[in-house]
Amino acid sequence: MKQIALCVSILLMASNGNAQNPATNYDESKVPPYKLPDPLVLSDGKPVRDAATWRNVRRPEILGLFRSHVYGRSPDGAKQVSWQVASTAKALDGKALRKEVWIQFSGKPDGPRMNLLIYLPAAAKGRVPVFLGLNFNGNHTISSDPGIRLGFLWKEKQRMPAPESSRGSTASRWPLERILERGYGVATAHYFDIEPDFDGGIQYGIRPLFFKPGQTSPAPDEWGAIGAWAWALSRAMDYLQTDPAVDGRRVAVLGHSRLGKTALWAGAQDERFAMVISNDSGEGGAALSRRIFGETIRDLNTRFPHWFCGNYKKYNDRADALPVDQHMLLSLIAPRPLYVASASEDLWADPRGEFLSLVAAGPVYRLLGKRDLGTDQMPPPDKPIQTDVGYHVRTGKHDITAYDWEQYLNFADRHLR
Ligand code: GCU
Image (cartoon, rainbow, N blue to C red; front, top):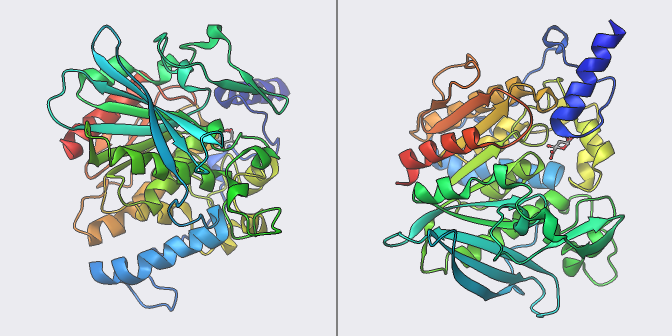
């Protein structure tokens, strides 16, 4: 028995590369009963019956609650941001146009900057729709294209140039040729450019640029690292709005795992994103927090204390005290197309909790005249459901694969073409 448990936990660790809490619940029959807050009831208890009340009252209310209790408030817009096109060239055997754009966050050329890497189909006539998402390991890892500037890696909190050997090391997560062939562009940046992802990484990132005089750490309701990464996606979007080859009205924001949490938060706040895609985003992303299965709020706050706002720590073991749950984050994307995807072996991210969260956002889509998933029965693996929202659970582990991308391209064809 012990051996089986050990094997299961090793498997789970392998599926997302992280050690986990031995107390984690993976038993469906042990999920305690829970009651979700209703996205269509105002905080004063009155029901939301029309789109105008949703738009003008309830939506801002929910957004405010996520700001105060979960991700923290981000600065408005970006007074200091500027950009510079650093390179433009044909790439991938002439099939693509590659651009590198430096997005400078402090207004100073030697200050912190994000290197936005863009591929556009060379054959495109007119402006193209684009998938925008942050990457985990550096732009040069998404393709073996030798023209991509080598990025950086961080070892023991030190930034150093990435080795040539890391080129293309995450290419399976970015099927560039296929995306371009389907008529879409891709824009990506390394999330460490914005703030390196470790406790204490804040001192190397952009958040201190916004401290008030004398401030040394964010207030309990101010942004965590996810807030900073999401904010940077909006700054990338500012640039994309100005690029004459890009259709700024057809930009989908996507992300895997912690970067899926980030894509959802970016899409919730910034309505310029025409489509939002969450790949295996799990706890603090698409998955319901009140459903105790896999990762919990305490796990998040313990292992990644820098991701969320200070106030979120009040909800360790008290998800039911939160005035929101993650289906309400999904409802903030409505009426825009939203895709949630899970992986069958990624139990840490609670695939069923991700599915049920999308189901529970359904009433908001319907109120706004859109189709929800149309079922509360979780589909079997590899059977996507696509309406105005989309869901699939892919066979396999925690990852973003060509299969996942294929579904996102199909979904984009429905909604962005
Ligand atoms: C950890 C973390 C998850 C996160 C994942 C990832 O497993 O607990 O919340 O989604 O890392 O980003 O890969």
